[in-house]
Amino acid sequence: MKYPTKTLVALIVGTSLIGCGESSTNAQATDQTMATTLTAQDAKAFLQQAQADIEKIQLPSAHAQWSYATNINLDTAAVAAYMNEQYSNLIAKLAKQAASFNNVEVDTDTRRQLDLLRNGLTMPPPQDSAKSARLAQISADLDGLYGAGKYCRNEQECFSLVEMSAEIATSRNPDLLLEFWEGWRQASIPMKSLYAEQVELANKGAQEQGFANVSELWQGQYDMPADEFPGELDRLWGQVQPFYEALHCHVRAKLGEFYGEDQVPQDKPIPAHLLGNMWAQSWGNIYDIVKPEQEMQVPDVTAALTAQGYDEIRMVRQAESFFTSLGFEPLPDTFWQRSQFQKPDDREVQCHASAWDLDDKEDLRIKMCIQITGEEFNTIHHELGHNIYQRAYQHQPLLYRNSANDGFHEAIGDTIALSITPKYLKQIGLIDDIPDASNDIGMLLQIALDKIAFIPFGLMVDQWRWKVFSGEISPEKYNELWWQLREQYQGVAAPIERSADAFDPGAKYHVPANVPYTRYFLAHILQFQFHKALCDIAGDQGPLNRCTIYGSKEAGTALNAMLEMGASQPWQSALETLTGTSQMDASTIQDYFAPLKNWLDEQNQGRQCGW
Ligand code: X8Z
Ligand code: ZN
Image (cartoon, rainbow, N blue to C red; front, side, top):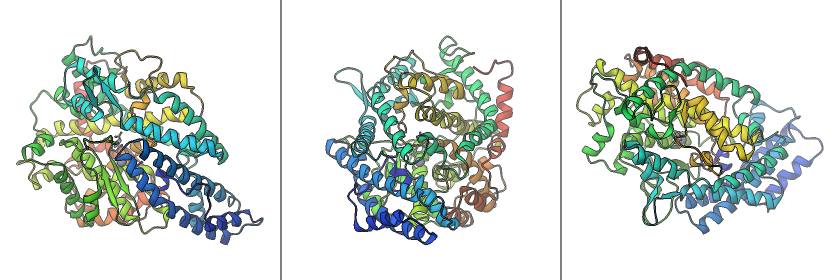
């Protein structure tokens, strides 16, 4: 997982430590927790030792994960699985020891660190060494199946996910769209039994840690009682839902006009292969189909990048310059030497974009298979946001080297990308003129297709996993529940009947990679709150969709003040530091898109919305 591969969150999937083989320092930590009467001082000593032990394994573990992700083969898989196992075993052991201080009176800071350690694993290994080894092997295998996955039309013609995604973005041939949509989902069929086995093993690990199951562990990461968190998500979704339904209604109507209402029935969910994205999670690629009738000028970043001869590195340099314009340090030379920007053609790699901090010092990297498109330009900003965050909190104690909550990590680069407005594009010479206000509906629609369409997808992925991990759903029902939730939240349906062995959740990276997904839902709410706060600080008076914080040192300083806190305070305090409020709140989204909502409501008059 790559954003902070080596932070606790990532460990989960990611790394591991020196097996059960214990260093003398480890033994000391263990002895302390076995003492009969534990004191606050013991807790502090334990935490200090625990962090030293974790630090030692993090670096080799991160290197093993990097090697695997950038060169998928039998050998790198074995090393990655081994290091993951060692690392997870260490954290699991320390988490149990941390729990022995549950009834010891300690200061707030110590309690927070103990809790972070107790909750630190995404997929906790069972104590039984055969089982923990199996769990690590399954994780590596699932990762590899996804990374090396492809669809072969026949013996000669195979397509990678990157190639099929590019076609799904631009092709308007429904037969080809369907072929690739279905083809990619063949790659996840072999994952199903592995996934089910993994659920059993990780739940066992969670139970040994005192949790009912992995879902409870995942829901307990948000500085509020675990059982209140789902309700918080429902509240936020409720703020966005009417807008989403208006967007859905318009998009379905336009798709119906384009492909015919027999292909896109107007009272049913939208077939998932027609939305310009392999997972129907962001719809910006079909802007041309759903755009307003009235001609509108909307910057075409893909065309501008191509026309100006941008290559992968220049795109990353351009993104870096946004961050330096805010006062952040340039990325180190090693970033440019060690990152993977392009898909190598001599080996299998995990193309899903990620950002890495290998040593909590200067070894920052990204791993992407960059395409020269506006969408990828945004993703580069997304990834650099992770790197900038990682660097900002690197002086915190190890257990605080993470974001305030995982949604914050995902929101920073996206926040910067919200500043890629026409004004900014003109400043960097990518466009010549700033379209006037009469074009705003087009521009807002383009952004809503990416950002608002995403929100219910960002929510449903873990609604599925929570039910899987809690045991509410058995493997025979995995796929059925997936499509039930896709319909319920997104109003999107499988275009063809799914076979009994299909495992469509596995076709989405974060499922085989075990990266929790609620973070992206939160990030899509938070990034608008951050953008508004930063625009205010930068003194931008105009509408939010036209604001860019480019060049504002004041905005950069304010952002950095939140980033450098890392996870040292509850996220509510970090949020307040930047925005003045301690609540996640989608009313900024409502304000940002208000003119578009009115326009959609007008378009939808006389249409039957809903599904
Ligand atoms: O996985 C990502 C990033 C890496 S953390 C590229 N994203 C989610 C996805 O691709 O599904 C960013 C948006 C949502
Ligand atoms: Zn990310």
